Each structure stands twice: as structure tokens, then as C-alpha cells.
Image (cartoon, rainbow, N blue to C red; front, side):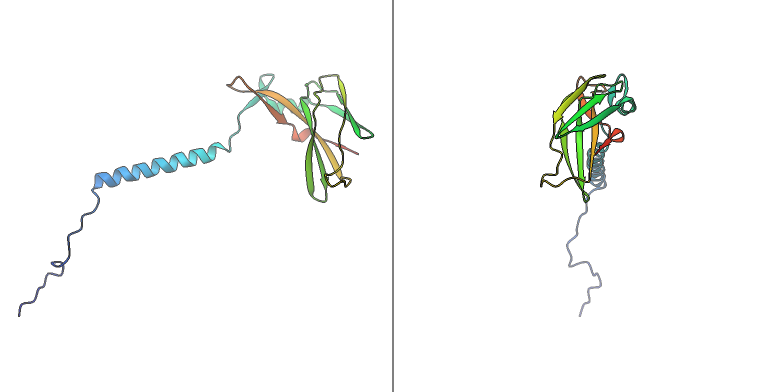
Length: 158
């Protein structure tokens, strides 16, 4: 009786990936992950918008306007140093908010009156109405314009 002491004699020899192919696959995996992270992170960076050669949010501090409610209309007077492209109107009731717009442009020293619906969509009277000025600026490095809402310059109306 003859005993076979070689345990591997009945198994097929398996070959692994060569080190060169494994290295190439690893580099490709790292590059694919880097591209995916770059594309994902690109959404966090906004285009830089300028007005008068400086960041547009600096121009928001020069915005000043008065709002007067006249029945179902709003009269807005631009008392600041910047033309206002239009206004966003935010109405809030019990934690829910709705946005609408005052579409007229109000240049420096001008006033505009426009009829607006100052109720929630369901007809309820809002707890708070805030009007935000919207400016238009140039996208840095491009020949295009973009709007910017001055959220720190909102005016609450009664």
C-alpha cells in the first residue's frame, strides 16, 4: 500500500493576476473614484457672480427700499444705490412657506406698484410676509448674467 503524502497532487494549479495587471486595475479604480468625487463636489461650489466688479453679495448692503401695502397691491420705492431686478415674496403660515414674485424692475430712485396675491394658495392669511430684493450680476469669466437674491436684506410687511 502506497500513501500519497503530497496533498496538492489532486488539485489543479490556479494562476492569479499578474502584478502588472493588478496595478493597472488599482490605478483605474483610484482614477474612477477621483472623478466621481470631483463631479459630486463640484455641485458645492457656485459660480462667482459680480456686480460693479466685486462679489454681488457685497452689493446687497447697498440695497435699500420701502414697501407699502395698498389694498391688494404693493408699492416699492428703491431708496438705495443699486437697481433691483425684481423681488421674491415669501409668505409663511404655521411653518409652511410659499414663494411668489413682484416681477417689476425698480431702478435707483424709482417706484413701482404691482398687484400681488398676498394670501397663501389655500386663501389663508399668512402670519408673515417678507420681500427679498433680487439683483442681476455678471458671471465672472463668462459673458452671461445671473440673478442673486439678497436674503439678508428682506423687509417684513404688514
